[in-house]
Each structure stands twice: as structure tokens, then as C-alpha cells.
Length: 281
Image (cartoon, rainbow, N blue to C red; front, side, top):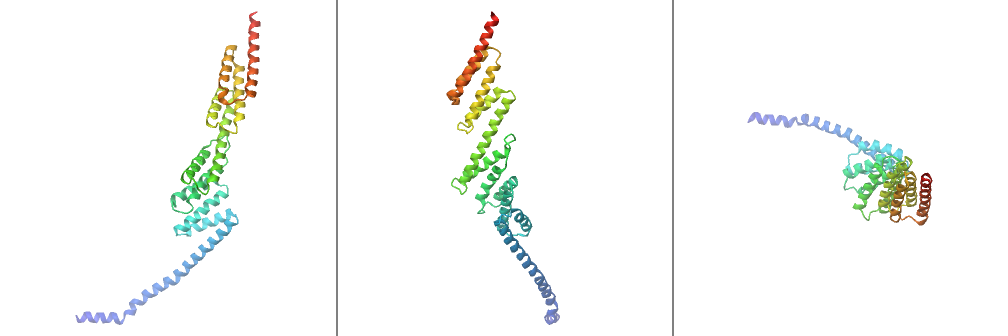
């Protein structure tokens, strides 16, 4: 017991020998760590202000470069979501539409409760819609745009971007109409007139009020004329012609179109009959 008390007395007397190193280590860490932490916070705040200034000035390329520098420094989830959204917007304004569409999609998945979710949903579809696709090429991007914008309208039927989404869908439908009509034109040029007629029939069923309606009717009658003229004998010409007459009303073909075709075909059939009679004589 006496030895134990002596031991405690010794520790108490020389307690500073044990405490001082710990205090020195803690103070040293605090002195060095705190300035570095303050320095990082100051740098982050400076970059935030610079990005905000560049974005408002529409210097999107420079703002994008600063965002890429800033994102690895951000630990706060709210801050990261804010600048990831800015990053997607910068790519959109730089016409990197497919990149921005993917970033807006990831944003919605990662931050479903962000106040930017509605805008991100719309901007994904709008990014796809803004990508220029030649009507002769595959229209996967166009269909993706239609699907995303329709999804946005389903979730936000009275949303902030209702008008923009509706107008974009109209433009996309026009692009798909032109694609379908271009396919019929190509069939006609290659001599596949029946395929062109079937394509135009489907077009008329899907888009009965299309702005291309006059061109569709013109090409449709032109294809029937070629089929009639290429028929091998009078009976087959008459058969094709009767088929055309049967479908005139369904295609809303006016008297001008139908009378022109009827006149041409009648003359051709009459000429073929005369040749046949002359040969018989």
C-alpha cells in the first residue's frame, strides 16, 4: 500500500512530463491544420463566386473548367448537387447535347429531392431534342427525346416548362414525319412504287393532319401513275387504276389531283386499246 502511494505521489509530482507532450502534439496539429482548412474554404468560396460570375456572363466553357476543378474539393452533398447541375447546363449551352442529357439523367437519379429535379427532367428531353439528326439517318435520339419529354409532361402536367416541352414535341413529330416521307421518296426513286404507296398509306393513317399532306398526295398519285403506265396490258392497267379510284376518297384527294390522274390513265388505256386493235387488224 505504501509503495502504491509513493507511486501515485511520483506520478502527480511529475505529471507535466506526461501531459506536456500530448498538449504540444495537439496544439501543433491545430496550428497547422486550421490554417490549411481555412485556406481550402477560402479557395472553395472563391471558385464558387468565380463560377457564378462566369455563368451569368455566359462564359460557359470557362465556367465548366472551373466546375471541374471545384467538384473534387466539395464534401457537402448540397454543394455538389448545385455545381453538378451547373456542369450539365454548361455542356448544354456548349451544344454537347448528348453529354448534358446523360448528366441531367444522373442528376435526377442521384439527387431526387433537389429543387432542380423538374428542370433536370425537362432538360434531359430538351437536350436530346436539340441534337440535330439528319432525316436520312437513324432517329433513336429523336425517339429518346419524345419519350423523355412525354415523361416530363406526365409527371408535371402543369409544369414550368409545359409550353417549351409541347413545342419541342411538335418539332420532333415534324422530324419523324419528314423521315417517313423521305423513306417513301427513296422507294419511289428506286422504282419500288408499291412499297412507296404502302409507306404513304401508313403515313396518312399516323399523321392525318400533317403539314406534308399535299406532298404525300402528290407522291401517292405519282406512284399510281407509274404503276398504271408500267402495267403490261390494258386489263392490268384498268385494275391498278380501279384500285386508285377506290382509295381517292380515303386520301382526301381533291378533284384537281384525281382528274389529272384519271385523264392521263384514260388516255394511256385508250392508246393501248387502239394499238391492240390495230395489231388484230
